[in-house]
Image 1 (cartoon, rainbow, N blue to C red):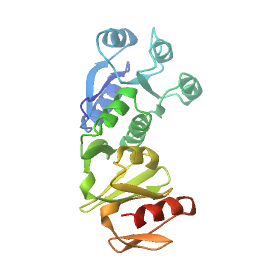
Image 2 (image 1 turned 180 degrees about the vertical axis):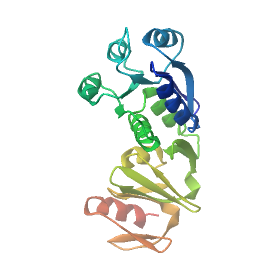
Image 3 (image 1 turned 135 degrees about the vertical axis):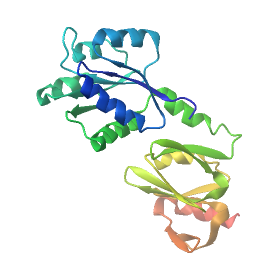
Length: 238
């Protein structure tokens, strides 16, 4: 991924800002543009920079976090931070990514960041799509808060498990929150075959098959009824 995530922290409490700053330092693909003590400082940054994400305290003097949030464009995502649980409903009314109740643990912070990554902004989605324009022999997928390169030649099969997938390669397994349909669209159809709603296999790694399954490195993967006719026809013509 070529662009790093840019963010600001807005909170009138220095200690609260410091905690978020410390957490952000642990993330490799995030740039903290500024830590702001009030909404006016945040306005200045928003007018001068492209900000992808704001950690925003709700209860601040003069201009509240909610007022600031309502003035921000949709491209900038918001994670609210506050000590007051009763503001949660209002926070979600402005379509916040998440709502963190102080004191904020690192685990809870990471969960909020994962929700941001899942939602993503269009530019991040576009960056991921650009890596396979027909001329590449690899894709990048998001795994463990970074973009990981996966070479087509190394893929054995792709497995869908609920709301994430596993890309099994000859050397490792890459786990990513992605739909198998989106991954299928990024793989060259001449080299990969969808055999089930939960499985895509690399054709060159199929060692045997029946009407019910294909075998890849001694692992039997099921052929579903809806894909059977197409799969068997494709395999018969290989």
